[in-house]
Image 1 (tube, rainbow, N blue to C red):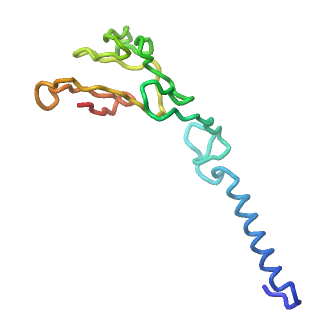
Image 2: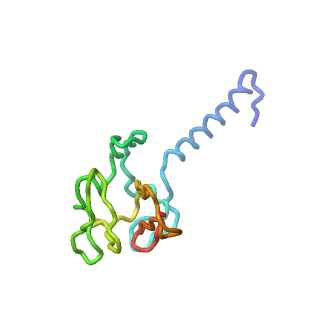
Image 3: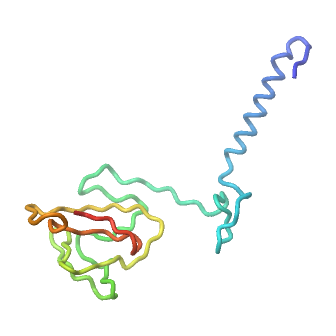
Length: 154
């Protein structure tokens, strides 16, 4: 659109640009969508911006053994005991704990007492100082994720 009045020829396109920018800004300010299918078993739409949002997390510091964990972390091993762990049958976890670490016992499995669905895993492990054997006989271990996916630690 052009207006032939002197001085307004530039003003009208600028008003259009400003109006477009305001509309884009308003749309970007909204989180998610309400015109998507419902997530089965919930009252939320897929990508629903009205559902509760995660709280802000203060990240942990750069790695060091003394760095604090992130503010939202659930620490499963403090270096002192296995109180957050149990055997798969529900019994007490009996892996040896010493000097701020625990050592896996041959043939014994443990799992966290608490269950997690949406998480980030931070895992620290050590390999044998002098590995013996070959292949998985050199210190085979693993971490089961949600009781079904195993991440091998060899």
